[in-house]
Length: 153
Image (cartoon, rainbow, N blue to C red; front, side, top):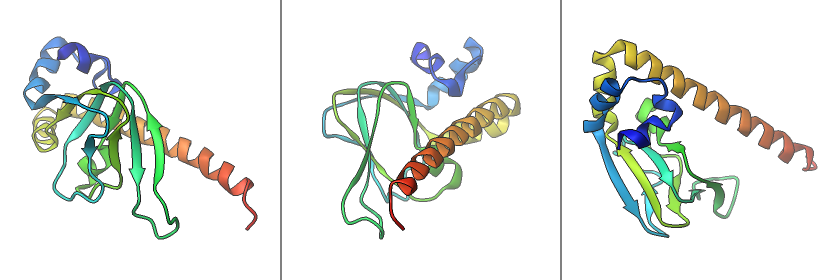
């Protein structure tokens, strides 16, 4: 599983020994089309998920603005669950498998404890989470501009 971890930006440039230290928090998942990886509204799931291969949809139906399900597609090498992992809030969307999926679930509580005890690794991982969130904010900003520019207010 170390080979899979090494392919994600979250763990980029960590040594083999450091990746081996993270391995006990990881569980391999083999999911089928239609399976739910993350359930919207779940208050107890603090885990991170790495999409190794396959396609998933980010699905949200919890909106007072829209009356139907919102779906975004994602493919290989994506990270999910980082907002709930960091904020300890409920899941803001579901992740549903569009195809067969290979993924890794990382015990979020265990990983956070490990990062607290290993500040050098913790800094690197948190820096990469910050970059991931910044990238997603940038994508959301672009999407919002496209929506607003195409909508008469």
